[in-house]
Image (cartoon, rainbow, N blue to C red; front, top):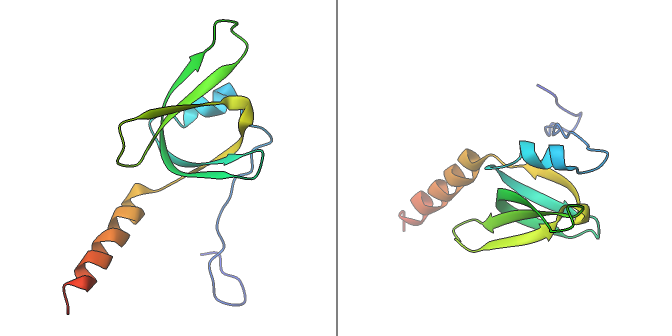
Amino acid sequence: MLESPSGTRKRLVIIMEYFSLNSAKSFLGKNVNLHLKDGAVIVNVQLTAISKRESGKNCLLEYTTYGNCKTTRIPIRNVAWAEMLNRNLIQTGNLKILAGSDKS
């Protein structure tokens, strides 16, 4: 395991030079955090589709938020990079919180 002197684990982060159509295709159907070029982060969304505009130049990334059916579109050129999430860890965390609330 990778550990720092303080005993905390280091995270393995793959840094992308830029977010392109090919890298967007690799994240389709997966839960990710989208980091935008302006510094904002869209948290825990599932990438559903990639659509092109009539001009063919601009591509839009379609995503849905967790637990919502409504899709939202954002231009791919506004996305700096994407961070893949592990849904099993998120769901396990929720179960532990619920289990802990029963012991009152």
